[in-house]
Image (cartoon, rainbow, N blue to C red; front, side, top):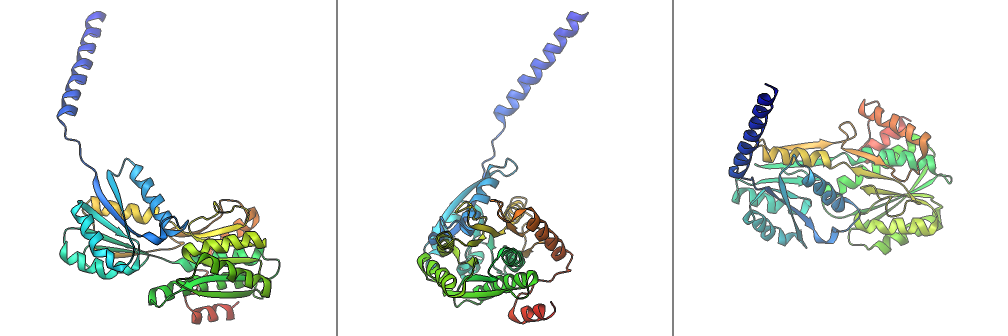
Length: 344
């Protein structure tokens, strides 16, 4: 009796394996959905936003929940976008992710030409059919940076280095960083001084280096925060040579110099990209603009090197809670900043 039961069991298992093999053999393997990502050539290897975009998307591609194949396409200037978008569509892209605000005109034209293709614009707003936009409340992360800088400063003087160009969006973004940083610093120490260097968009890393040296030599700053794209690497180099702290931006930049990078303001790109890709693959994609901030963990202050220390990290976490609960409302403009400081 036991032998018969065992034989039956073996027969059942064998039949199951045989049937599974037949199903698997005949089952069509689904090809991955193609997703194209368009980035500016000059920002490849920037240790900032573009590198964070690529790193985040590469990690998502490895996730078995997403059966995707990424294609990275580089452009040199605005005139390249039409050609590159055409190339992405011809390659079978289901979704095209654009990481440069100068592509807005080309994307608007493309959605008319290719009504079945989905587009996502990262770090700016663009309204139109089949377009999702993602923006970040960078000023909230900058507030945390300003607070940490003021608490770490021994001289009571901080530096702020930013790039500015003629586009309204860049000015607005720069103002959010600036207002948030100054507000956070004043929240920590109302008497703190902030020395600013606003440079043209086409400056070099060496120009940023020189700007920091000038601020140290003439004003005695001992912590500097940069919002200077790839050129901001010169700020971190200067901080090392001049033995002061630097605060990075766009991604955790402690890997550039763990000794001098006090912290970094970051955009948490994982959640936005996962949401966009999921919507596109599940045919739930619709026109929208999503704002990511401290409340939904879209921006943050990172310190992988541990330079902030346990006590200051605890204070920053409390401030994050206060921002989430709207006990602290971070100013976004000079007018709001003046009002914020007057209430301290």
